[in-house]
Length: 220
Image 1 (spheres, rainbow, N blue to C red):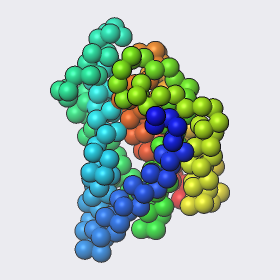
Image 2 (cartoon, rainbow, N blue to C red):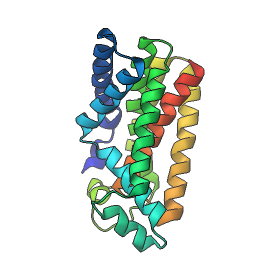
Image 3 (cartoon, one colour):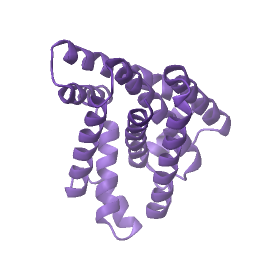
Image 4 (tube, rainbow, N blue to C red):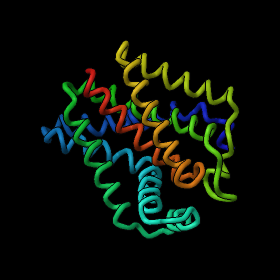
């Protein structure tokens, strides 16, 4: 099961962030506007992952925003159609991430930010898998399983180590703020549907990625 190899999540995040950075730097070398370069980086991430996390964000936005009862929320989240809430969530996610990347003070910081965001956000997905109950009898989250406490701690430690290696002392602030964002989304999901699904995990990745980027703009 995926839960048995969750330590690879931050490593995969580094890989995705590095490839997105490469695409962004090509844009800068071509003399493109920083916002366009940021959009290219976000587009590269989506292509690499198959927009898996973006799909989860859209489904959660539609389900939590459009359903009254838990069963209705889960039904809407499973519906392949994207509603108004989902579209808006995707628009804001892409726009905010691209804008934050564009506002980095240097290209080097933008690269470090993308790699750190990829690693930390996916490490926190592992935490959500460990702490939140799976609410479906089938689906991505069920197939992935629940990681052990030891595996979760190793994953979190690896994500934190990558952040400190790339960001230095600023990593403390970034990790603290991002951890808080992950907890808030987790508590919100627990209140809405009683736990997590694959879509909730994707949402946590998206929200924490934005939070990492925002924190780096703030402190660096």
